[in-house]
Every structure is written in C-alpha cells, then in structure tokens.
Length: 235
Image (cartoon, rainbow, N blue to C red; front, side, top):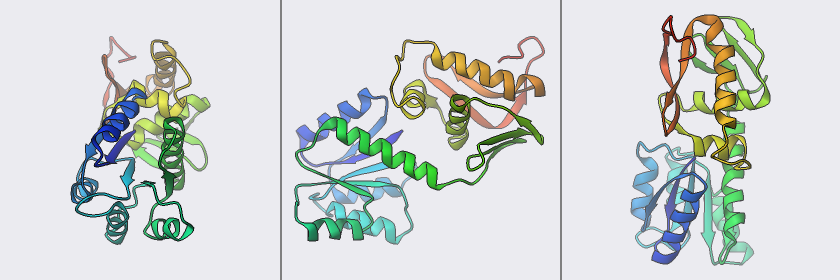
C-alpha cells in the first residue's frame, strides 16, 4: 500500500513515516497543504491519504475538499485535534472518509488505513483484464481464454492485488499486509508457495508467463504476458 502523509510537526511526521514503513507500506511525507495537494494530483497513485487538519499553506480539510472537487477519489483519513461534532461534520462534508483524534494509538491508525484501503478496493468490482486473463471480483471468478480457473481464496486475493497494479512492483510486504493483514512472518515461504500454486493454475496449462518475480523485492504482472520458455514453464 502506498500512503501520502501530510503532517507539519517534524516528530510526528517522522514517527508516522517510520511506523507505516515498518508494516511494509510505501510512504511519502509532505509538510504543507499545497505540497499535499500537488502530490495527490501527481502520478504516484496513492492508496490512502493521511492529512493533518492544521497544515500550513492549505488546511488539510481544504486540501480534501479541493481534491474531491477535481474528481480525486483516493480515501482520506483526517488527523485532527478538533473534538466538536460541528468540526467533524465539516471534515466529512469536505470529503474525508474517516478521522482520528489526536493523540491517537498507532495500531488504531494502521487498522483504519487498512480498512479504508479494503473499502476502496471493494467498491470497484469491475472485472480486471490482462490479455486473455480475466478476474471478476464481484463473482470471485477467474478465467483465461474463456476457461474457468479454480483458485483458493488466498490465490484469488494475490492475483487480484497483482492485476490491480499491473505494470507495478508489488512487494512481499504489501502482499503480507493486504492478503494476510500482516498476520504471518515475512521470512516464511508462504507467499512463494501460494505464488507457485497460482502460476501452476493460470500459466502452465496455457503456456504463458504472467507473474514476474523480482528477486528480493516482490512480484509484477506486465500488461502483455510473454510465452513461457520451453525449458522453464514456471518462470
């Protein structure tokens, strides 16, 4: 998961960056509202925006409102010290998806960010396509060239994650975080086992190679799968 953190208090910004990185997320930090607005409109494709309400330049709530006005739908979690109901209403009406009062517990923050990501992914149930490989999130159905492929729940979720980010590296940290909710050891070979099984179902019977392993980093699905080499059907 890729997160933009907009926080102008240096110690808190550093703590957030370190804590989110430790659970395997990619984190970019900006310290003012104008930078947050520009970053959210850029090419980074953030999964979630974490905005402090009281940012210099533009307040976080203003950043959120302007992003919604130009069509940016990225989930927003607002950090705020404002505790009154009218303040919370203002934030939600500006387009924030959730808010968290300061001071907050880091575990709760991480859980809320995960929930926002899951909710956003769940809202988009359009079929995903890479070549003749089609994954239908709503029906939990996978086909290749019209042939139905039976996947386990974990295999389906891994494939969905990779297809949602076609052309981009998906780190092992990200797979653990979003498929297992971080509830396994990164040193375990559980991911390798599931990816190998996935390849045996979506690639080998069809003579294709959809998933590329980037050693020491993670996995990637490219937009146009190549034919698998004859001497290495699992590559």
